[in-house]
Image (cartoon, rainbow, N blue to C red):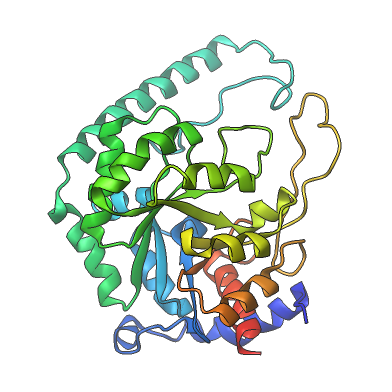
Length: 349
């Protein structure tokens, strides 16, 4: 049995209005429990990146009824009082016809704006790096307490590690994870960085899971079963944060991968995506990508994955990652609620 967007709409009508009548004192008395038939459902805080203030994330997760979380490092830093990034971010400033297309020259005004953005970015990076290096266990204690008091298991820290990350920041990520009391770190990263992570993970005896994407043409990306197996061979503390949506988009089978490597999976990301189109890329636009879509409209075997977890009693969490566009008139909390109810209905069937 599958669930359509219409089914999700009915589920939301049945659940979302009730959220508005809950107060924080009541939530404090009724701890959430999203372990359904032995499967721990949760959410990555990336799902609340649009329109949800950082200081409301914990309350919103509790309102939805989720009892496990994968906390983005930037969200944790904001909750701990880190220097804020400049308003509006660092994007924009390029002319041209889109990615890969010919670029039109920047006007003098655009050049000045670009220079200001670059200066602000450099100043922010300096400030946040200095702040990170001064953090201690006490920095993270209030963040940890917020989740604990709400009855939410702070299970995974998502700390992304780009190709240019320094060893000191990798070490910082593990120190931060230990202070927050998480079980593992998930990370969008590269094969080369994973080699540098391995000895640090072994030193701390903490599991680090490479987060997969769908760029099968780049050998540095965790996209194919072979690249995941390559990094897992580096250390018993290197595992996989399998995103079943990206894995499906890349035309691989998440069921077979989970069955083979379940003991090396830190956590799953649940989302629905269409398969990436086969054939050559569109000239000047890069490779085509299968769309992120509301659950039940894509090619990802969400139902089959959840039933496998229920049957085999795997002990890693399955975290909702809201990545499809939020419909007009809705919001991330309502959409995550839809996804949670979708998963619950499958597991309780």
